[in-house]
Length: 373
Image (cartoon, rainbow, N blue to C red):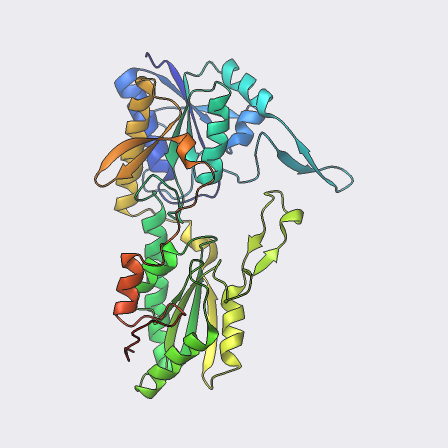
């Protein structure tokens, strides 16, 4: 089909590499197909309230190394269940989906490129079911989307966490302390696991494997006995103790996103450890530093490849799909097959095996536990 005018929006949390995608979609659509490109601002809210601007080759020329997204984003703007507080302070919900579709048609767009994680892509699929030509582009620092080996933004987030662990190693050793680093990871531990392996952590705690406090303490004591009176622990924000729920800082009912805000597990574990060992324990919460800043070359290249193949898929009329990295190639995956699925770390995965084989504790007892420190 002929592409004359396309739109692109970025939804959910920001991450490094978003601007690489925006740049690639813009340049490819204009240079290869002579199409106009319209940037929808602030995710689906821009589609609801008709906020947009034209994107050009010149205007996107210097955005490749920039973190964040020049279009803005939000994780609060679900057009099908738009939540907002009224003047009385009560939370209300309204369906703006039809208004969004009418704005899409008013803009005269041939395709809408939806860049985001699970929630954003689910919304994209809902619009596709209602006749909107959608191509999905996977984005999340958590790397938890099915159908793709990696999402852009993930490698940069892992590197930020690894850099933090490198610094905590030296200060922990200097003061003979236990250093706890809390990283992002609501339902999955990909960041914690890869950052922990690359950053030399001694304990890694992830949502997929509930931890036993005694196993964590055993690792710390084993290191003490071996002459290493310090330890570094990396914990995903969604990690939980055996038999307990993840720690939240704000309930779902009080948030516009409609999901509980996780946070506090790092300090919780630090307090638990302090009650049982004679070492000082300190906690660092990495937070949103994992989302911001200059993207690594891997995420720039991946974002660029995904953007270009998304435009090509649109030109071929292959709507209702997400572009994805599988092995070394970019392929198309039906959005329908991804709905509501989260790609967690398999407890028997090679990454888990790698970590435990070099003596890293995952907070569980192994059948053949050695004395690695």
